[in-house]
Length: 122
Image 1 (cartoon, rainbow, N blue to C red):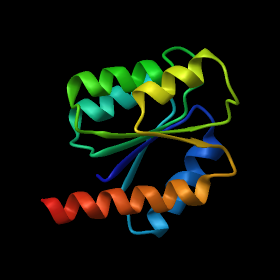
Image 2 (tube, one colour; image 1 turned 135 degrees about the vertical axis):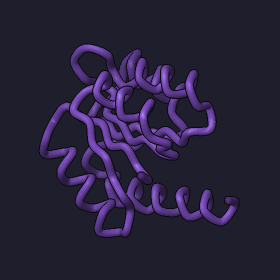
Image 3 (cartoon, rainbow, N blue to C red; image 1 turned 180 degrees about the horizontal axis):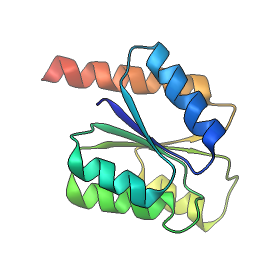
Image 4 (cartoon, rainbow, N blue to C red; image 1 turned 135 degrees about the horizontal axis):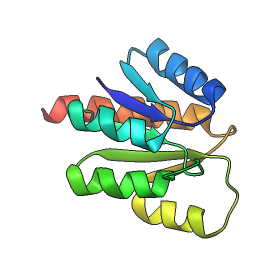
């Protein structure tokens, strides 16, 4: 498993997972932070892409729990949020924050490059 994609909106999950798969990456997807944590705990996943504004546990809380379990995990936020406390918190927790939908291509390119870099180091 290369990437875990987390978003409460099905269209975002399908689109991002499909684009990553077309670039040769193996993706898992979760519709909630709780579901994502279950997948994360039972798989060695090097990179997580998460929305930050989700019902229940938000993406920032998810990011903090992932960091507590495996600090080396690469965390990217992909969000439609344009500001506020949640976005500020995300900038502290995530390695990088990308805006929906305008930064989808940079997100895909950055994800592929990060995983290629990890493979070279391994």
